[in-house]
Structure formats: structure tokens, C-alpha cells
Image (tube, rainbow, N blue to C red; front, side, top):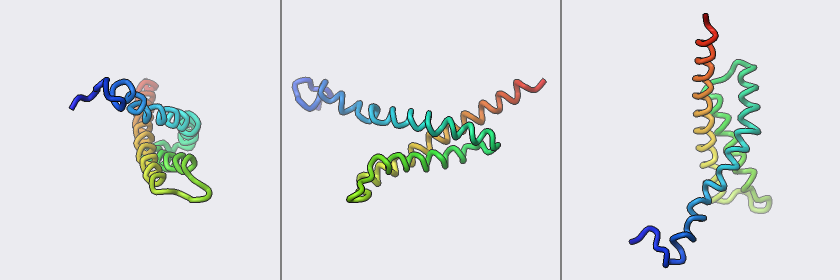
Length: 118
């Protein structure tokens, strides 16, 4: 079996868009959620003094699921099985993204507090 058989119509260069499709779809969703939800949430949690890995992870879990429900909900049929799977994947991806952002925020806050101390 050859991975990229350029004589086969379903492999070679014609397979590249299919391989890139998840990145092409996921990148704008993650970037948009990070900018329009993540940054305001960071500002809010910072000013409330509630920043933590779990807070960011829970927010990512909720927002990741809501984005997928918002994109895939069909008013006539509701949520299909495939949309439910996508919603669960959005929740997992959102919670991981939020937790990683929360860890990075903790690291930045720790660096800021050590550099501000005399």
C-alpha cells in the first residue's frame, strides 16, 4: 500500500484538502472563541480574583459545547447523533484549551509577582 499514490484519484494531491479540512475548520473556531470569549473572560476573572486552571477549564468546556450546539443545531430535527459527538468533542477541546490557558496565566502571574518583589 502506497500512502500517496499520485495515480489514484483519491490520494496524492487530491487528498491534501481532506487532510487539512479539520485544521481549516477548527482554527477559526478556536481563534474566534479565544478572542471573543477567552480574553474578556480573562479580564473578568482577573478583576474578580478568581483565576484558576479549573475556572478556565470549566468555561472552555461550556463554551466549546455551546459553540458546537450553536453551529449544528437544527430547529426542525434538534441535535443529531453526529452533532452530539461534535458537541462532546467541542467540550473536550474547549476544556483542554481553557486549562492550558489557565496554566499559562498562573505561570505569568507567578513571574509577575516575583519580578515585582524587591
